[in-house]
Length: 190
Image 1 (cartoon, rainbow, N blue to C red):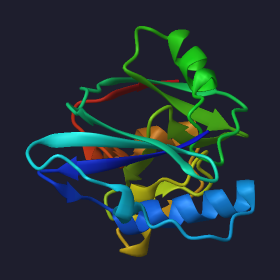
Image 2 (cartoon, one colour):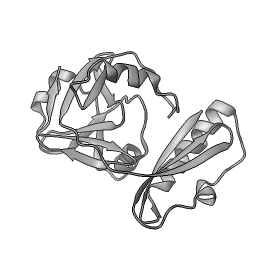
Image 3 (cartoon, rainbow, N blue to C red):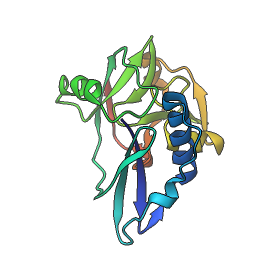
Image 4 (tube, helix red, strand yellow):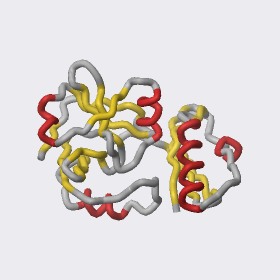
């Protein structure tokens, strides 16, 4: 089972073009579907407030749920080496949950794979070097917000190692719900 998580803000469906693209690619690659399902035709979002729309699907849409959303606060991060594979946005996130449960003193972990930083358990990441925002060239999952910011020339792809963190001036999380969320006063431990 796969997921699309879409931000709904006062009835406005955000970033739908990128969610539709990932939905289409995932269905085609994993289920060899050729039929088109237009996500917008299935959505009937609440009109007032901030909501998370969660679409569960395989070759067909199985369920659509709306829940109120309040962003978490993030400050403490830990870099952890792992060989997790997550090329599609699967509903089963047990590997992420298990990894994160090993480090309860941290708000989130940053996953390092093959010597390079990839993502956190819930988002893509970006670092500011004083001139430009860089995002890992090889993320675990190519997120929709990341795709949009790359297309808009806001993010550049880079190979980033944990030793590089100290040279960066700013750090951000990015996903469908957080958008581009710059973390103030963060602490990243190796």
